[in-house]
Image (cartoon, rainbow, N blue to C red; front, side, top):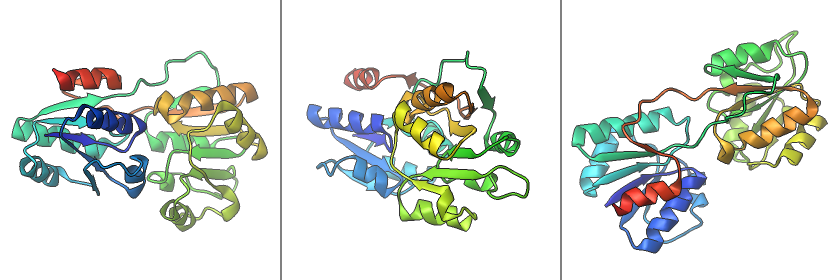
Length: 250
């Protein structure tokens, strides 16, 4: 049995490939949105977050021989739990890692080591800031700070995301609830509509829409604050779904 840790577009593709090949597998996703992304297929799917012990119990229960980690590049806890669980049970762990942003030559590109540093940079913006970082770390970016820039949050169109924004003090007019990723043209239109001078995002790779955001800010001549990925020592890594499936076949 293969355990596939999902929640990304790559995980959906990998799961479908495994299904078509008739390889027994179980997909785990942390949210209902992750389950919906699988398109209502007949694959075995488990929803909900798992800590290390919960993951170990699942691996034992399903007699898992290989764990495929296709979670988001910033899903630190999920990956760390999987690495520890596999090490404890001597089960092979394989990480599918997206390529990060390679372009470095745009002078408006600023890299930040973590969300706090990004928040400090954003606080000094000379105009409105748009956050495209999800909701988990929104609390580190205080909207409406006296003398600070207007801060707009672009989040997933789910009740939980919108509620979190409101709890943190974001006004309705400063919440954009929409499903990405967006094209460079649509990003640019949104940024121009809100007169954005700085965009904050995570280095979640081309699949996560970073390239399109960079293209949009370059056209406008505004700043992009890119939060570097957390440093995780993965035991084994591949960079494409093709390579992942090849390892499964081996």
